[in-house]
Amino acid sequence: MPASSTDIHPANVSGQLPVSPSFADLVSAFARIGLMSFGGPAAQIALMHRICVEEKRWIDEGRYLHALNYCMLLPGPEAQQLATYIGWLLHGVRGGMVAGLLFVLPGLAIILGLSSLYAVYQEASIVAGLFFGLKAAVLAIVVEAVVRIGKRALKSGFHRAMAAAAFIALFLFSLPFPLVVLAAGLIGLLHARGGPTDTVQISGELRARPAFLRQAAALVLWIAVWLAPLPLLWLTLPETALPEVQAFFSKMALVTFGGAYAVLAYVAQVAVDHYAWLKPGDMLDGLALAETTPGPLVLVLSYVGFLAGFRDSGALDPLVGGLLGGLIAAWATFVPSFIWIFAGAPYIERLRGNRLLSAALSAITAAVVGVILNLAVWFSLHVIFTKVDPVALFSFGPLTFSVPKPVWSSLDVPALAIALIAAVMIFRFHLGIGKTLITAGLLGLLAHFLF
Image (cartoon, rainbow, N blue to C red; front, side):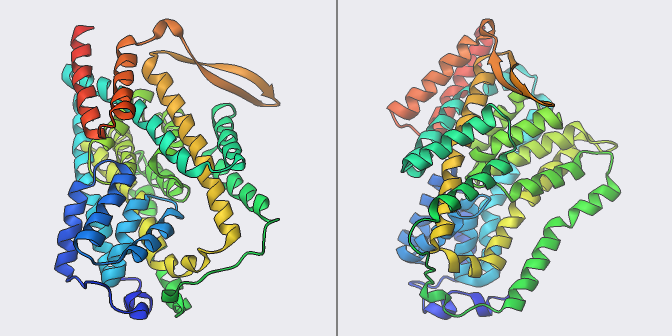
């Protein structure tokens, strides 16, 4: 393993944990968590709290919140990072590896299986009707995410302005998502610089500074492991989409602040418009698939990688290319989460109390609300209307700025009706995602055969 737990294991500094589980107990618990982790990051974080804090009493409330706050600062799937952190807290690097992998692997296996069925039988009537209903229900789920995250993140006029600016930058000007994130962080820093002097609060468990050379070696080794498939793919399978899948999702892993909803708009834009791996409706189907499977919602990126490998497989069998594409997308997406925990956590946590860093991150979180709103609008147009055309607003030199405009005669009344029913189920009756998607799928089948 790239790093030893001898110097950085928190239990070595701060004393005994409430209950010390065996490694077998850890494996059993996180296998259970991996199979039950439906409902997105909020539900997954609550599930880990119930099992690790309330049932098992492996860590106390303060330790759990300490880990959660750290993981919320990082790019990537925060729930998987929290699982990795808890495993590291209990059994060092070995525990973190097992907990993080078990959180992802059940959902990854299911999403690859469903992606295979989707790629082969997409045009079958039953499958088409099912996904017709699911993609309509996803609209309500994404809108609910905008509301939920907005309530938490938009605490001031400044943050509301950041969200609005991010939405305008993406919707009207189609600026790259990473640029929006970086600009939000910089603006947050500038906005906070006039406040009181920033201080760094270092928790007691980090009074012992980790060995720099050990951590640097761990960082270099993990980065090498993460990027190792890329040159192999370029050398052995250059005629397929697989090298581009690895390169693209490796870049995405560095800028996925705010979870899957935040990055989906950018992934959809690039995968549909630039690489032509997917059609707009395919992205909605993938999000619906990811909502119905356990594990991080960002597993939808494995679905994107599967379709890319399936449709641009070169000399490979399409299903083999698809499975490789899904696995490569997962590798590029999730390996960095282990890097942040094992190599970076001891240093980044020392800055958790830094006022300027907190201001930058809160501005990024506010901008993410605008990003998700852009996703909701994009999805709405492509679900409720069967035809959407770009309309130019103005030109600036070689650049032309445009907005999508629906063709009103292409309004899909059944899709609109299912989306409204899903919204009522979620917002009025507070039903779970599972019940909403099952109902929408059945309504989609009915609408498909009737209309």
